[in-house]
Length: 118
Image 1: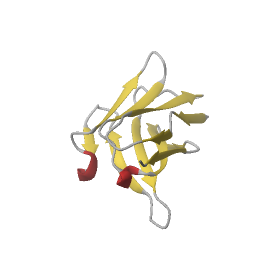
Image 2 (image 1 turned 60 degrees about the horizontal axis):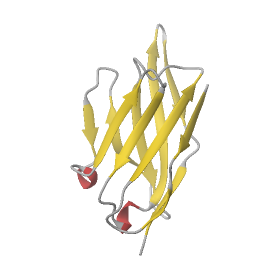
Image 3 (image 1 turned 60 degrees about the vertical axis):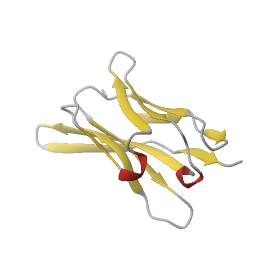
Image 4 (image 1 turned 135 degrees about the horizontal axis):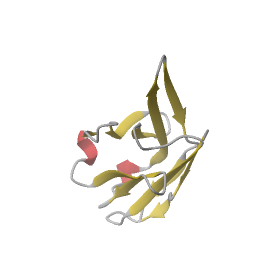
């Protein structure tokens, strides 16, 4: 099982980025997917989570600016980030949780760096 996160980079404030999390060996369909971030010197925090039933929760700091989604055909999760702010600078990680009979499977992607700076 592998989660390959991509799409990070450097952008000036106010711009947009789209992060992707391509899954292999497991399906995003029927899974809870999440995006988390960790800034230097800070603990990892939840950015957005989509449950297996497509309920969505956002961190208050990104509501109205970020959108989490999944494409089951591409087996990929996305995080559309608009109106980026310097405080959004962090390493972003995708997470997948799938409940199977008798177990809960949890996986993390490797992280992709997002830097928002003028």
